[in-house]
Structures are given as C-alpha cells and as structure tokens.
Length: 292
Ligand code: MBD
Ligand code: FE
Image 1 (cartoon, rainbow, N blue to C red):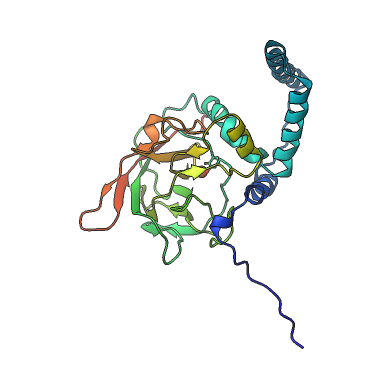
Image 2: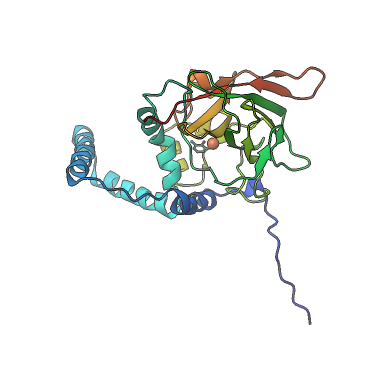
C-alpha cells in the first residue's frame, strides 16, 4: 500500500542543460539585479536611435535578406525561451560596460561579473577553505593576499566574495548535482587586511553548446571557451566595490576569451607548494575610495 515517491535528483553536473542554467540566471537577475532607473527621454532617444541606425547600416551594407531576418527573429525568441539573455549580455556586451564604468580607477583592474554570481555565500574567517565535496577533484590552490587602499593603507576586515567553476567547468546552483554552495564563499580578511583561501583550480568554462548562444557560436564558426578563472568581489567600507576575475598563466584561451574579459594585470602564476600536492599564489587587491 505504500507509494514510492521519487525525491532524489540523480543527475550530475554532466547532465547540465543550457536552458536550465539559463533559467537559473534569468531568475537570479530578476531577484538581485533588476534595476529601476530614471533615464531621460533625450538619452533613451539618443541611444535607441544610434543602435537602430547601426543595425540599419549593417542590413543595407550586406543586403540582409527576408529569410535571414526571419531566422534572426526566431533565434532571438529562442534566446529568451532558453533564459539565455543574461549569458548573451555578459559574454558579448558586459566587457565594454565594465571598461567604461571603471576607466577612472587607480587601484585594481576589474573584470565582468558574468551570469553566475550568487549573493550571501557562507561567511568564512581567514584562513578559509571554500565549501567543497569530500572528494572534490582538481589541483589544490592556496590563494592569498592583502587588501589595501590606493595609498597603501591596509583594510582590516575587508571582504572577499569568491566563486568559481569546479575542475570540470561547472558552477554550483547552475548545474545539477552540486552541493548548493560548492566553491563559493565570503571570506573576511584579518586585522592586517590579509586573506588566505584554500580551494581547487577551476577548469576552463565552455558556454553551453545546446542553447541559443551555442547555436550562434557554432553558426559563426567561433569557439565557446573562456579561460579558467576565479570570480571575485572585494569590498570594504568607504571603498568602491571591485568586481574582478583572475586567470592562470599558460591557459590556452587567455588571448581569445569568448567574453573578452582577460586583462594582463589579472593573470596569476601559481607555484608548487613545497612538499605539498597543490599550488599557491599571492595576489594583492588595491581598492579605490568612494569619491566624495
Ligand atoms: C562564465 O562563467 C562567465 O564568467 C561569463 C562571463 C560568462 C559565462 C560564464
Ligand atoms: Fe565564470
């Protein structure tokens, strides 16, 4: 008389589907990033006219056909159905926004946030070990450094939010089968502004090939890869939030990141830990003050 109720999701990260991570990223945007801003009629008119005019120029110059127009319409609809607008915007547009937003900074270079940030990851004192599976694969990495202002003052209690893919290139909360906070944490620096984070080295990330963005990539003959990276948000009272990514020397996609987000100042060169299995690297963050 007892009914069997399947309560377990037996899928693994390798069963990740574009539409599933897309739907997650879309929901996350709607929860955390939705902004209501006042933009003047003049500015909306200026920007919308300029964007539409450059589209018109391309259509006329290359004599885009009716069939091509209808195909693009169908593709745009599919981007939405797959929930891939966050992915599309962050891969192909955010890098320019980030450059413009941070051009006046004197401290650390930043990089795009991307679609997979989750706020409120578990808070960890330094020295910290990120939440990970008991048998988490990958080269152990000790990532450490100091957080200062542009004039060299250390920032005790500064916060380093860190999130990254696992050694197969999957992010927790966007691929099935991973513990909720796997490889995500909020690390609080000590009284000298120092942090130590034990984690594993992520794998390069491939944009899902089975969704609308993947279809564009294949149709255009591009590759779908980002170099391996750590994502970071570094903050302290009175300082501007730094959103950054750090990459690894020797990665084959440093020079052709599909998201155009690599900067030379953001490349790490870890060295083997003496007598240990993993690698270590020191990288110091310099934050710009919030301007008065
Ligand atoms: C990522 O992990 C990422 O960092 C960006 C920018 C886009 C897609 C996936
Ligand atoms: Fe990423």
